[in-house]
Structures are given as structure tokens and as C-alpha cells.
Image (cartoon, rainbow, N blue to C red; front, side, top):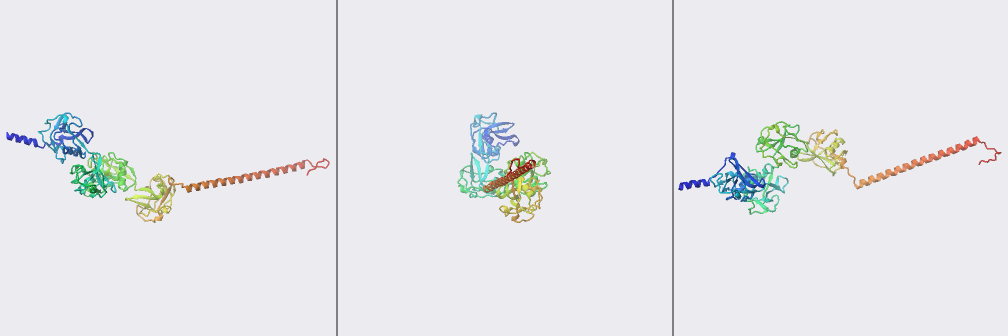
Length: 513
């Protein structure tokens, strides 16, 4: 009898682990994918979990496995409605640190054996797993904040180290962690401090997967807020193109040499995605988004698929995409980009269409030498920047000097090019130029009529009108005088005819004075 009881006791405390091929987990009946009734797929069908001993540790494991952040609540009594079919699990007992719900201790005699009804179905509320960096110099450096219970809160720097920072950088697509500053390096936050004693191995994909104290439990102040400094995104390069700003997109993911370089699949690849690559490589405006291995097939890994950028991100890894390394592509689908060689702007003038010509190359704005600069080159710049037509192409002595690196010299344009990069030149950064000879433009959209200029135009118009009136008057007067002279001549000629046709005599009794 004792031996039987011992056997029963062993059965009661065993861990029942499902075959991974025959196990799945989901949430049903909730307001979103991260809240709902817990359901387990086993032996070919979905079933629920009984809420006996159901608590936050159990919910924590469910949320982690479903990539739904942290557990916020572990509701019981069919909070999300009653399920149907089997009740697979009862008396679940998770420690909270398990990587899968199937690995929790379940004090039952086996799947499907329970003393519950569906009115006792267990559920979870998970947080949306969101992390952000605040108050840093860029989107990949700053104070760490995490979103929980509809509120952003900070992370305490107790035990905070480079491994923790690495997970944050990875989750945000910001590449390698460079440092893990504490003591509110990026300023103190406000409101809640959600996490403390975070302990990551550095290999986790999200901060919520790391060990930590219960959410909201801490003895920290905001003067202890943790921060991170990331390298700013996974390195990107262009390969196989005709120039440095066109080619097959490759991203480095890994730590050793060229072994970490892989390609990007062209599923959903568009001009917004290309613009991010162009921005990351300081290559100016995106011109086209070729796919189907336009620049040749790569080799090795295909790191990214289903990339979806808004076009404003600073690096490709910050865009939404499928999990790194997961794809349904071949290298025949390798994505490419065609960027302008450099960005162009007009600076130092009264507006964005009149001033000194500058180009952005290698992360630095520089000038264009004005030697050989002419109206044809100015016309190309005005066209490229949608500033109308070129009114003039003066040297920048007309505007504020740039006193920066000169990128282009000996520029020669026909005037028909759509972009300055299409014009011939001596090469980027190949020569020096005096700042007094910096190229500038005045485009038609940049011509401004100031009050003084308007007054000058009005005065000019008045003078023209007065001159026209004076000339008209003089012309009229001349015509009038000519008419009077002609009339007098005709009168005199008529009198002579009268005198010749009827000679006057004394007998006629006529006297002509």
C-alpha cells in the first residue's frame, strides 16, 4: 500500500512535457493577440487550461512564449468566455522562468485528466512588448523605457550591464551595444520605474525575456535610470553595382569578418525601404528599388525578409521585418537599390532656392567649387530641387561663405541633366577650392521682392509711363505743327491762283489790300 502511494506521489509531481511536434499554444476570445483564454494544442485538438492554482508565474511563461511581453494579470473563471472541447491541463505550476509553457511542472496525472468545467478556464493579460530610447542624441542611444499597463516607465540601473544593453539594442534594430550607462546619464525619467535587477545573457531577442524582479517592484529613484548607447544599426553595404551608391543590399549580422554578411529578400521591397538604405549610406535620394537579383545573386545567408520601412528610419534594421534569418526566398530574390550619389541643398541664402550649393557625402555637408560654374550647372540644381529655372549662377561671394570641405570641382553640365550627380566633375573631394569661389544659384522660385524692391519697381514703372507720356505729347505736338504749316501753304497757293485767274483793274472798282 505504501509502495502504491509512493508511485502515485511520483506521478503527481512529474513534469508532463508534450512532444514539440504535437504541441502549440494560443490565446483566444480576447481583445487582441496578447490577451485571452489560454488554449493548448495536444493530440490533434485544441483544449483549455483549468484555473486551479493559476497565477502570475504561469501567465508570465505564456506571455513570454507568445512573444507578448510581460504578464499583467492572470484572470480565472472563464474571464474571456468558456472554451469548448477538452480541458488539457490542470494544477499548472510554473516558476516563471521557463522558456516554454510545456516545460512547467503540471501536478496532474496526464493531459486531459482534471476535475474542472469550462467555467474555470484560465486566461492571461499580456503587455505589448515595447521598448524605446528617450532623450539621447539619436534613435539608438538614450534612456531605456518600457511600456507596461498602458504607461511608459523606466528601468533601474541595479545590475545593469552591457549584456542588458545588447538585448535592448538588438530589440530596436540598433546593432551592437557600445555602453550601458546608468545614473540617469540621459536625464531622469518620470512616472513609474517598471524594471530593476535585470539580468540578460545577451542572447535574448527582447528585454522581456530576461530575468528581472517583479514588474513595478523596486527601491530605485529616477536618478538611477538606465541607458544604452548602440552603434546605430547593423552595417549595410551595396555590392555588384556600377557605382558606390547602387547595388545589391547586404547586411552584416554577426561578429566575425565577412561571414556575417547576408542579403535582403525583395518581398515587399519598395522605394521607402531603398530611401532608408540610401540615408544610412549617405547616398542621397532613392531613385529605384530593383529586385530579382538585378545586381547579381548573393551567397550565404538571407538575413531580412518582408522589410517594411516608412522611409524616415535612420537604418534598415530599425524597419519592421520578419525575424532575422527567417524567410521564404532564394538568392534570385535579392533586393537592390539605386540611390543618387549624394544629396544636394541650397544654403546660406534668403531661402531654400537661392544661396550656396552644398552636397552631402560621407556624412558631411560640403561645397561645390565655383570655378567653371555656369548657368547650365545652376539650371540642373534648380531642376533637381524643384526650384524652377536658374536666374543666375553667381559665386557665393553673393551669399554667406560655407567654410567647409569642398566636395566637387570642375563641374560641367549641359543643363539637361535631372541631377547634379549626372554632370561631369573632377571627382568627389579630389581638389581644393577657395571659399570665395564657392558655387551658388538663384532660382526663379527663390526670387524675393522685398519692400525696397517693390518700391523700385513701382518707381521704374512710373518713370516709364511718364517718359511714354512725354514722348507721346512731343509726337502729337510735332504732328499738329506739321498740319498748320501745310494748311498755310495751301491758303497762300490758292490766293496766287485767284490773282492769276482774275487780274485786278482800276475800272472794276475793286481794291485789294
